[in-house]
View (cartoon, rainbow, N blue to C red):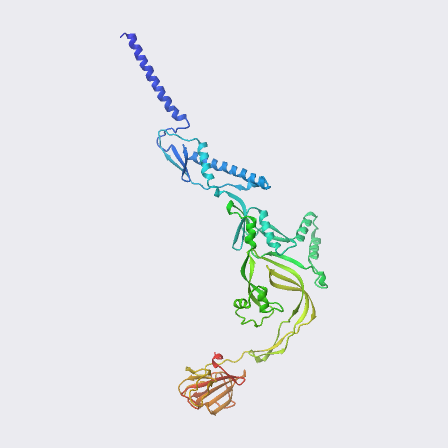
Length: 550
């Protein structure tokens, strides 16, 4: 081979090596710049498999890219949801801009990026990952939230779509008792709450008109304003005739405290207005208290509430039967239907009625508190009245008479009653036990009574017998059947007797104090064994001593 040929061969080989090196270099450069590959970086993860709620949505070159893709997916879904809400509002004839601005999209999802270190690897475009994330999020439509109004009263919580529906709900509750629509419901800030919330304020249509007129007119200055307000709010207290009073509804409101707050709820958690009305206005049974009025009877009250007399008696155990006396002002428990949202209101009413005066009591300091006597029998009167009558639902709860004209005056019942505290009675011996009680019995021996007019207290002969109460000895001596016996008259008209004594220590006419020793027990007279026979008599009639002793 010539030198020239050799040089040519060497040169060709160098060209091939340079071409190969250029090819390899170009390949590695492409790994750095082409978007579908992740460049090799030693010492950390450089390829991330992205998971959303456990579903693989693609691969990206960093966790930051994965988070950015999720934010973008949420933003795009929210925009799409707002446009859908606006379109639905347009079909329903509602404001599109309001619907767009109040629509809120939220979908809970857990993002996970599993990193690994690779020399090279294929990555997806962020657009593709974002679209796949939207598919996963869209499958969780139940987490779509809408702005709404949450209403709370008592234990009831409702979610309504708009403020207008809330007002419609409360207005419908009022209309049951305000058919003339003389009152308006407004939602105003609840100043008792630390955080922002609304509550209801109810005004009459006339009040609302006056407020609007006042806002439109120039204010009167200083003392003139104050005098004007006083004159406008004051009505003459006297000289008014019945026809001067406006009858009908004068006040209305809700019994429960109303709380309303703006919130965001899933669409399925928001009630329709019809469903809310059905829940709020549906009757439920609750116990109520009725105040007895003139002319009422237990049977009449029961019939008014669609109850039986037995039902009323069961709820009011202080009344024994249908004939039990009830008085004006007595409170009787009744069960009546009441809606979940109850309305309290006051009506000004005219009516005529028979009435009774309150009982008059006259004290007698010479009588004991156990004594009462009627010294004047009552009779009903007749009157015409204007009254403010309070109601809760359909139940009358009270009234205030504002005008009264009496056609026939009622005569009050007058009762004289004692004020002195009556004497007390104590056990007449130390120890002992009742060996024979008060009332019917089998005669213990011939000659004994079948009806025991006292009690027998078993004690041994010679036990001290004490006066059960202070009084005057009216008899002390022997009496057939009783044996040795002592009679004591007491200040309250009662009398005690102590029989079968072995020794008497007092004499007739002697005053004794409570607990004073008057005799010794024994076994004299018609007796079957040592004991004390003890009686208490009221107006000469024996009563059970155990019912009167302390």
